[in-house]
Length: 334
Image (cartoon, rainbow, N blue to C red; front, side, top):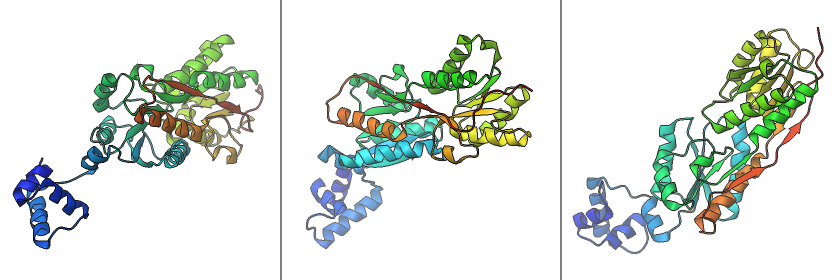
């Protein structure tokens, strides 16, 4: 890959002259400018932000990657992060990784090349290309995890108590008299998915109902929620707990498609409290996450790392709350 030195040598000028031509700053005679630009084109030189960041030590940008940009939960997290970043003089670069490790690594290269000053990833995987950097920095790498908690990654994280929230959601259904309860999980490769299942199992076990919990798996999408709910309803459950509001929306469709009524026949609980949840019919009982606060807090931790004020991995657990609406009701025996 050609460098600015190669361009300077090919054009017979100094690297400072090449820099002035490419940045448009300073006076350069037309003949020299044409010679530099010809060398750039001939060599295929592609200047990038990394070169400028070496001089300024600051790109002024933070990268936020999300596993699924279509999920409305992430929109509020991103909004909180963007507002916090803007308040301290940064802009936000957004990357949609689509649960693809290769794409995650591509975005992570932006940090390695110093095109951004820090990375917030809202998933469960630390990109492979950053693992060495994190280990070598002893907790000082400008990388923060949002929404999930994986202590083995050794990076600061911001999240809620997912196991505790799931336990409370299922306990709510048990308190209404439901005994045959189905849970629609997210991907079990994620600590978040495993924590939510663990909380549901704990609630059932505490009431002697461990063998009556039915589990199906989804990917947090509406479509996955509908498909899983159809299977669980066929298994005779009287209540469903979905690990995202989107999946709960799909489950509500499945309840209606099978001729049942929510909550008269089937109670339903979601997770996240996205802005659509209270406008469903019936309004959705759900676990409310502090979405914008998660975004703001990840930026706060990242800024501490960037400015050298914080070196050890920190776990920040934010509060959640169970919001009871109209989609849950006492069990009615038939």
